[in-house]
Image: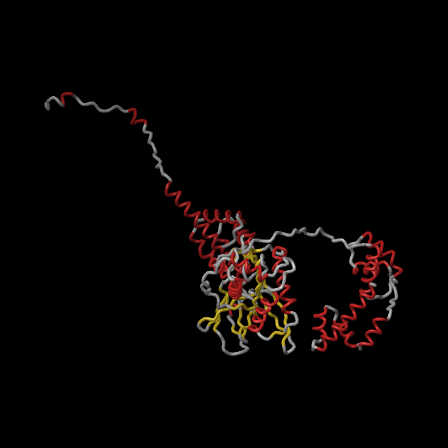
Length: 523
């Protein structure tokens, strides 16, 4: 009966492949639509209907080349049930030099058959994380948001990568999706937020996010540091931001499911025309399918639940003031520390490139190209070239300044007391901020002459004890200790030291005496 069921599925799949082929789909597209291998699709298309039925009715007798190893594999799996088929294959090759040459898939089927016949399950090697289904959240309490990307087919036969932002209301499961053809920046993410809140007719009390670089600069042990632009936006709006811990997708399972739903239900098999058409189609899909069909988990229709939930959403405020950085565009840094902007190459300071995910922000202003880091720190400024294929460079960017570090470091070290602690302090700055070590040394060299040795020594001790490795902060601490010392000097009472002279001859002398006859004439 099982063989009959298996053959029946093959028959149904053969007719499905023929149907999709007549509709103009190629082998790869049919493979993605049906979920079967491309080679199987090719085999089905190569057979006529009569040839297929003859093939499906024939009994396939495969030689069981591995039967002589049956008992060995069974004992091996009983004692080590967690072993994979690949590991079993390696053990067979290691133990039996005369093992026949077979495909790894044959070994896999052989191992799976032994597991099935003897009930040997593959236990997990680690304790799985335990979950429990949480009760539904209150209306209007929470939404979850995330980003996704997908390669779409184009009319010319190529592929186009699209980026999208999705948000879902946690109670009603009402969804929203926004597409664009370039990676999201803080400004475009804010625009997507605004579109989503307008679609929902309000904003929830909190929005749950993954730790995406578009939103945050640093996790900072829970004190999440937001990017400047997104921080300003959140202050203008009413919702609270909640960021999940890294590598913890279960904390936002609702939005993870929506991302997969957008890819598999809406984007799969769809042809890319342009960004505007894609967003229009997405809006129609939301109304027609995503928000109008019964949700598999809640067994309720999101659109109907949203009618109740929107009464609990926080009313939208007036549109926030546009950020001064709204015109900034995100560009990827090349390995040679340049960016490609409008068919020209612009150089960046040596060391800007920190791997494949190094990005900078660009802004045009009065004929100049201003380049910033992702945290809005200025990098450099170039005049904009209106030619093509040019390299616009700054000779200072190509200069390796590492050779001057030793001399500069020795100069600063000579201005600081306690060579051992001072050297340790400078080494920690270099370790924590290697790209800004020179700048830190220049700040120290400029300000250290203003302070006394005692204040500098106290500041070094304080910074080492509290893991503070920043020249500007160090100078502020030194300034504090200097002011504290000056205040103590002002309020201290200075008692002068009085020396007593010991003239013993003067103490033993008698005073002169006057005669009474001298005063009688006066009387």
